[in-house]
Length: 457
Image 1 (cartoon, rainbow, N blue to C red):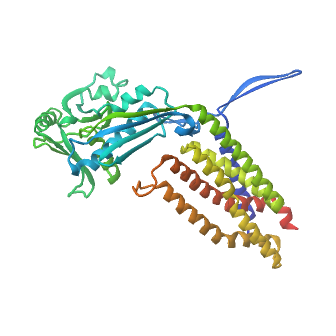
Image 2: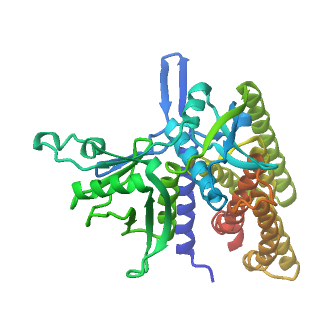
Image 3: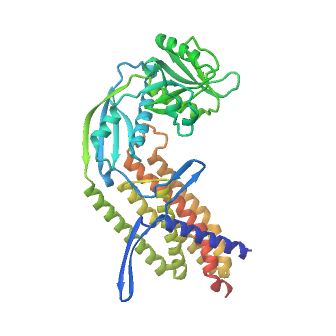
């Protein structure tokens, strides 16, 4: 038996979710210019600013859609990686550190949703970097090609009057002379005492002497580790370390310990890169592709909507309302996550529009079967949703598996590594999950509420 009060609550929740998604998808700026008789409006309407503060930290979300290199234009750079000074056993760690360092630098440069790949051609390794929307390519090349700078700086006493406005760079301003050239290797180990992950540092003979002096000078104080002038962490020095083997412990899990080791190795392992190929892609083609893609999406949405209404009447109209909600939720998630839209990604979105109504078609056909068996409309609807679920689940599971193979989340070398194909896979998989949600949950609730008169008859 359907609980009507619960159904109404869910219905209003769906409307609230739809309204929030509508606001998120609201254009950044809409100019309104009306001059009809005495009615004169000349005003710009702006999308609400999604920002808030927690204590002293401000969170601000950029809700603009992110477009890939093929749509936004930008630059594609290929660097040669010099691996001649790296031992064979250290090469995988060195390449991972290089990739991590380049991705971090690009984020500092203000370029988001880039594609950074390490590719092997015969016996040579290449670094491929795609920078959507970048116009100042020379600055980007200079930033990417600079060797990572790892420094160790000690904590200093600050004057009381300067404490309030002091930054981390002010607090850790004493250069110890210890840098990435002195660090042999950073690795992750499990503590024998606490069974928790810890990061081990190994210094060369010169670094061992400098580090021993630093730990003596800053005993019971903190020694900060900086990578490219960005602080990684500032562990406290508890004992003087004279053998060149340091342990950083406390508060790590396996993932965070590995990330710190990778960042430290980025400033320690001597991997240099040099630019061997550069190509610039104009944004004119991208804008044209976006317009055509959006037009195709609108046409597809209209055709699917007309088909549903023509074939299922009132049921199809309610399914179309669910389809509109599907579109709003999908675009909102594209903005919030965010998802980088490439042209194949837009194709995936258009494809998912048609797939979004598949579940409704299965459900409506099962409803017709139950009505032909003599069931009343209300029972037929509930049975239709319940009995169509197995078919919906199995069909979409197969597509999700295919999407995961195309996305290749574990970067397996024998599967696809193309960013554009992955973009298609992401939008397809996301569309399937949202389609199941709107088709099974949203449409079912809309039918229970909006078709109430028919149910009661």
